Length: 203
Image 1: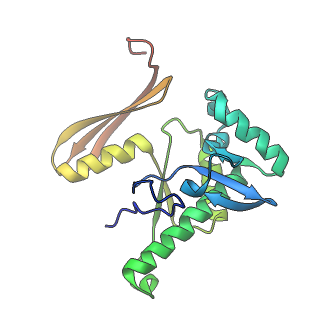
Image 2: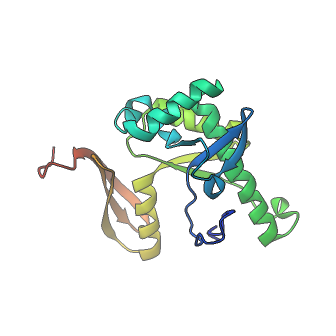
Image 3: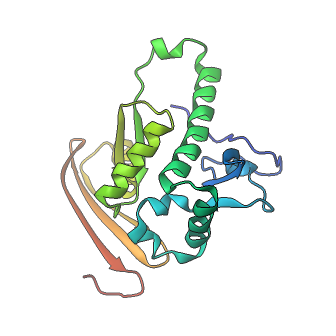
């Protein structure tokens, strides 16, 4: 398995990392720059993923409001902006695979895409995420997995033994807790709850 950590960046001083900023800028309604190539002087979309779930977006007003205003000026939907960004990421990923696997790798490997989404994503937001991914040119074989669940799966796969793993995915106000019960590599159960991080007691 190869983890991409050499995302394209115009600023050579930026260190390699497996994460790439969720930013995209436009010129004449077409994508101009994305990720690390978006400069601080450019007007760009940030945190636009949250706009796929308006109810959650209302909980993080700052950058989300700015991106929401940009949607109107570009006459684009949040789904279209997400698709434009995913298309850039996908194209870069395909180029990276070709560089490392060689031409014709598609005929030797079965392709499957797994996207992670926030644990509290609504069904409507999940549907918009899938639509954006397909509009971006990703394969039809796409699965959605919650972010805390993906983290728990990684730990369980590495440990490869019976144990209980608790994962807490939090931001400034909300914590999503998952308790995964593993037995012989398979899940026996899943618990999830939300709570306000500022309070000490559980709901």
